[in-house]
Length: 237
Image (cartoon, rainbow, N blue to C red):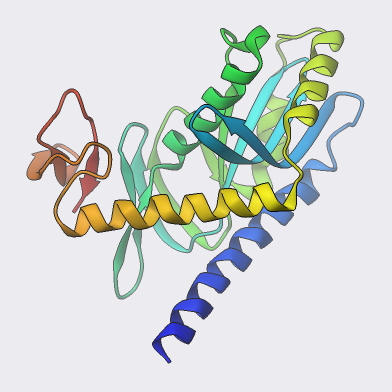
């Protein structure tokens, strides 16, 4: 019975995430195809394994890397927090700062495509209307229905048409379409999350294994790694 409950909960989370990504994909299809090239559900091999990116938009006005979240409740956080808070009616949950998560995706793209390594890539974090955002960030953090408006707000030309075509084709080539490799990626992510949860239960930093200590800042109470500043992991409490 317990196993069935856990399976249903995990399955529902996957379905909700999939629905959110589909909503964004549908909106991105409305962009002018002559100006914007779109890739959805991109899986890239990296030096440390693989990374999955929800959406990438390439145009002469910039490269946009988009992370979609389909959470509900109040979402509270800041640009540089390790974790954000999801405040629900009967409980609070910690979730990984999606800005930092997306920064990892951006780094992966830059590492794989040297010609844009020193260019600014724009990060966009999207939430469904199920959430209420209380976020203090320079990065664009907004709702799914505003994605096209944000992308079209950038009007300064940063790439030539030829560069856009090369970047698009390169990402298409690098995108892993193998079902077997995509399944392995999901398995690896689950293993990483499980290992992190085990360390947190032991009051240990999931990054370096250092002991977590209770601390306080102007943003509230949190647990920080004792190995700071070498390790900047933080957990909101």
